[in-house]
Amino acid sequence: MLEVPPLDSLAIAFTGVGLLFFLRYFLAMRRIWKVVGYRPSFQFGDFFRATRHEAFGPDLEPERRYAARQLMIGSAMLLSGLVLFAWLLATGAPIRLDI
Image (cartoon, helix red, strand yellow):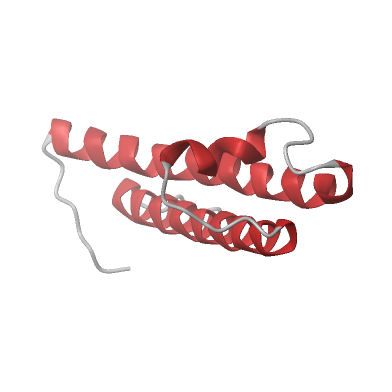
């Protein structure tokens, strides 16, 4: 029989995997910016250029789609983990940080 892990373990796993997807997104954007010659900045709007179609030209379209996919999956995973943590805190369930 398949055993379902406890919610606190799922929350930690979703949050960790979401952060790893965000790391992959930032590395993909860094690679795109090096090819384009764009100096990376910390302006909030620059990080969402990957969601616009052909934002870096037709040659870098596969790289842009890869970065956008990492951003969307990372956002979904991180949000799921944070919602699970909020649920556990709201219900008063004990949260074990050991995996």
